[in-house]
Amino acid sequence: MKIFQTSEGHHGLSGALRSRVLPIIFALIFVFAVLSPAAVVFAVVWMAPPTTAASGAEEGSQDSARQLPAPDVQPTSLPEPSFNVYANTLSGAVPCPLCELPPRVYVPNSTAGTVDVIDPLTFKVIDHYRVGAIPHHIAPAWDMSALFVDNEGSSSLTVLDIRTGRPVDKVSIPFPYNLYFTPDGTKAVDVVERLQRIEFRDWRHGWALLKSVPIPWPGADHLDFSADGSYLMISTEYSGVVAKVDVNTMQLAGYVRVGGLPIDVRLSPDGNLFYVTNQGRMGVSVIDPVAMKEIQFIPTGRGAHGLQVSRDTKSLYVSNRLEASVSVIDFATRTVVAKWQIPGGGSPDMLQLSPDGKQLWASGRYHATVYVFDTATGNVLARIPVGSEDHGLTYFPNVGQHSLGHNGVYR
Image (cartoon, rainbow, N blue to C red):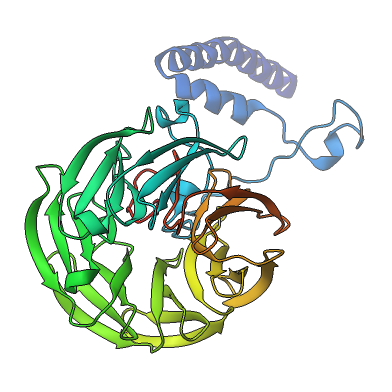
């Protein structure tokens, strides 16, 4: 009896406590949840039953639980894209508003003293006019606002309007065989081959002379700039020397002797090497501009003369002027991987590429003819009669943010 009474009293007390404590606990949880949103998440997680693989629906069921992997919290980074000097030309698209201009190929005829204008869509000459004496190359301005015809024989530049394609002005500078612009656009470089010097000029302010740099070897004619624009490498055709000039101090900084007759110069896409055609040695010299030495010679053909980088920047086109052919060098292996012959002969000189890279244009120096190659097959698509001794033709407008001059070198 005593035990029974004690047990009954205990259960009665426990029930009373439960009836009072549980409401208090739920009340506290409610207040905590209201005061702290994080508590809701804590409560849901704490009160939820544990999930195991066995408790889920069968594999393959639409209701099966998806077990997500733990997040990857390790620091990651993407590799840097490969540096390419010609990155701004890869798209093959002419920047606007230049894209609104009709495409034209301008051809200077050195002996005739004229310019022929070709419509590249029809391969027809649509305009012809006189300029100064011995025009050698047609250089697009750095900002592509004008075209300049280098009239070496009359010490002048004929300025062409890019909208009409016709002469609108003249600039007087001494014997311009070639005209270039520094990569930053601050200076023009007049290559005065006759006087064995180059002249740095302020082309935006009356073409004022900034400094004249003597090149103590005969035949200075073609050049290209380093990737950062701090120096240039210039060929001296009649001495077998390639010279280095500091663009900032505007003074000679070194030279490398390659022999033969060095002509055109082009920087490799990775900015590490310079390729120089050598008409006398019938190939291309590869120069390390830091060590200042020739590290390789690539035979291409008789009269290796002009250079052009392919639109995908994987190949280098080389015109072999004395054997009527174009060689294709693979940059990756530095070997000749193809040679395109002109049926019946010719004299391909300076080269230009269409914006899309599908056509390679070449002046025919001793045949008064412009040749157009299909870069996919190497076949000659057209032969266009022009004036005598056609030389540094330019295809304009073209790709890239800036022109470095010559007959259209873009970056």
